[in-house]
Length: 411
Image 1 (cartoon, rainbow, N blue to C red):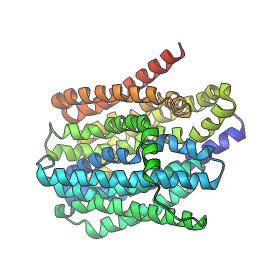
Image 2: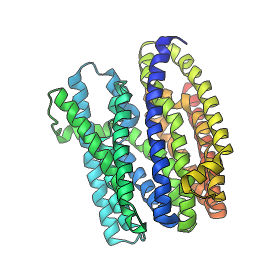
Image 3: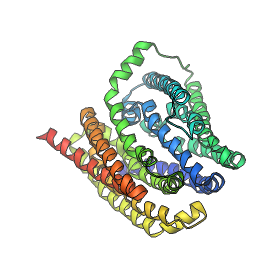
C-alpha cells in the first residue's frame, strides 16, 4: 500500500486513538472514585441516565456525524463550509432545546423516571455538548489532532471537578452534569475561535434552510437513531429485570466495553475522507483500498477481545477496587463486540460514501428490532450476561443484514 494512501489513515487513526486514550485515562481515574463514592446502586442509575441521554443525543446529531465529514471534505470554499457549519449547529441547538423541554415535562408530570429524575434532568446538558460537537468538521478537514486537544482539555476539567465535588451518593446528579458542562464549554470556545479566525459572525440561518437540512438528512438521522438504540438501549431494557446493585455491576463492565466498541468506529472515521475522494475519482479502486484495512482491522479487534478476556479479572479489580466475578464475566463477553462490529466495516463505508440512505435505514432498523427482542428475552432469563450475548448476536445480525441488502441492490 502506498505512503500516499497510508499516511491519511495512520494520521487519523493515531489522532482518534489518542482521543480514545484520553477517554480511557479519564475512565481509569474517575470510575474507581464514582463506584466507591456513589455505591453500586447510584453508579448504575448514573449510567442508566447517561444511556438515555446518549440515545437522545443522536437525535440532536441528526445524522450529520455520518455524512457531515464527506460534505465538508468536498466543499471548495471556506464560505461554503462556514455556512454549512452554521446551519448544522443551529439545527442541533434547536433540537437539543426541544428535547430538553419534552424531557422536563415528562419528568414533572409522570413517574416514568422515578428514582433518578434529578440525575436525568441534570444529564440533559450532555445534549448541548452534542449539538456543539465539532467532529464532523474536524474529520472532514482531516484535522483530528484538534479533536484530541479539545477532548484532553474537557476531560481534564471533568476529572478535576469529579474529584472535587462527588463525595457521596447524594452527589450522583453532578456526574453527568459536569461531563456535559466541560464538553460544552470547550466546544463553544473552539467554535468561537474558528469564526473569529475567519473573521465571520455566527448568524442564525432562516427557517427555510433549517427545514431543508431536516428534510435532507432525515434518512441518515432515522438510521442513526436505530444505531444508538442498539448501542445504548440494552442497559435501559436490562434495568427493568434486575435490581440497581446488579445494574451497577453491569454498568462497570459496560463502561470498559463501550470504550472498546469505538475501535471499529475509529477505523471507519480514519478512512472515510480518503474513501469519499477515491469513490469520486477512482471508484473501481475503492474495494481494494478498503480490503487492506478490513483484514488488519479484524485481526486487531480479535486480538483486543482475547487480551481483555484474559485480563478481565484485573481490569475489574482496577476499576472497582475489588474482585467482582459478575462484572468480569460480562466484560469477557462484551470484549468481542468490536470484532463482530468490524465485520461490517466495508458495508458501512460503501453506504456512507455513496449515500445509500435507504439501505442504511432499513438495515439498522431491522437490527434494532432484533436487538430489542433478543435483549428482552435474554435479560429476562439471564440478566446482564444474557444482555451481553444479545448484543453480540445483534452485531452479527447487523453484518448479515447489511450484506444482504447491499448484495440485492447489485443484482
